[in-house]
Length: 187
Ligand SMILES: [Zn+2]
Image (cartoon, rainbow, N blue to C red; front, side, top):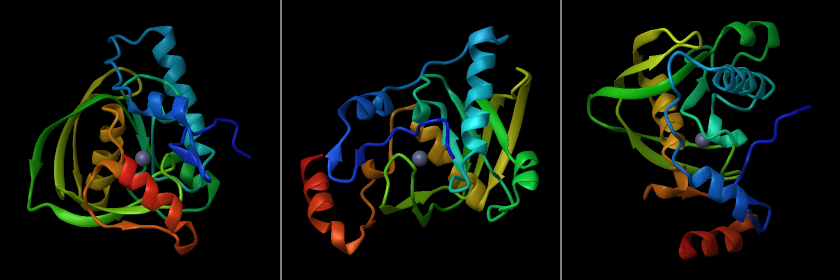
């Protein structure tokens, strides 16, 4: 059972105004060295991430924390064994993309905050990122292919950007055509 609620733009046919406002608010950088509040936020995000087996990434604003912190998996994406999953993720604080390389590649993305749909989004296949690790040490990282896509998706969250903001094709469940047609028309 999940203990941390993930905020969503909608629930069924209902638009979540307050949750949308939070998800849409750009997050602020966290001071380094980390204070107690930041350390707590890092722990909370890690817990929230680890209790989901349907997420490859989670950004702090998705659980209502307005800080630039992301958690994500970079390999073994299909690992279901909870023990193995525990080891296999990264947390970055104040991440910043310093380089994007390669021809953008289109891929389908889903998001816990935009339930039921998938959107085709063009992302760079290679990125370099500067950030702090969970202890506050400066790190330089390079991500490729699907991992690069995941990190770019999570970084968007920190600026209040979501998959529904991209112009690519949207995949909606047939039964929900009416709701989503209206949603994308009004947005
Ligand atoms: Zn997302």
